[in-house]
Length: 435
Image 1 (cartoon, rainbow, N blue to C red):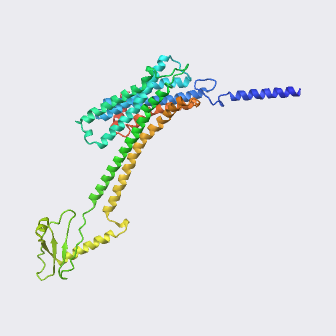
Image 2: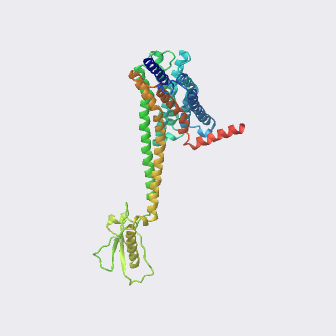
Image 3: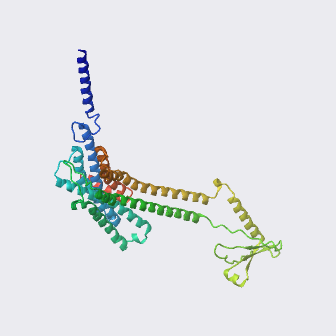
């Protein structure tokens, strides 16, 4: 009896542990769509998040397209480049994200293989086009900052360069997505729909769609920041220099002359001082006088200095002003002249503008790298590491993180423009008034 009881206890405990280990709470390989491993609330939460991302992508990029189409102030070539980016992101949200969400929530591909091929083609085409448009926008901004003739309305560079970049972005995207139709592909597994895992195509597509554009974006935005910093500092220093008053030169006294006479030679920065004659009619002839020698360009050629008679009181006042200037220079920093305080303010403004430019460029590049780099790392690791068991949850997360960049682009590339903000307000106002 004792053995039977022990056997019964061990059997019950093993059954309980096996049931617990197979439950959804302790199963690490949770696949969306599998009722046995995922709760209904998990599917609802994931579906709600994906729906919000899709809505943000479609509505945000739709606003950009309508704004550029309707508002005449936005009919510029640079804004047409932004509108082309919005078209690519809009198609990602309208055609690619819904099918990807169905695939994620069901845990399998429920449609035919032909639809899978169309889905993969659209995914690669529109996402690659979105990335290449970001490169084109960075090039356009660099040309705007560095080339003065580029911004002119009559400039042929700007007239043909921007449409050429738009066409180039779409054509290069097609060149990345079409090779699987010509044999550069792998067979799809049953009830799955993934991009071709061929190693050659993986290298080709990832380098062309992300890694080369990433390097170009980093280099161009670094150059833009350096140009902006140089111009801001030069402008601030020039304003500070203009605010500084011209200081009177220090007199040079010739000690060889008699005590009753002094010679002061005044020389400007680049040219000799213009000769002036100033006789004080109120002084008596018997009063002590000094001789101020001003050398002109003409007088130096004949070695005949032009002599100006200046009274002793004027000479003393000149020496007093020079002494006062020397004392002002010796004052501490907190008691300097207002001009020096103004120079400090100009430097602070320059630093503030540098920080603003750096923050804007950091947001643009930081969001792009954060959203797309994890996906392309996984895309490279998958075909070359057969033993790597990448969790399906991580794969889905990095995929939708890349899609999320399409929802953020209309915010990043239009929120800093007052014209776009005014156009958005106008569109919302018209919609509210019609309702």
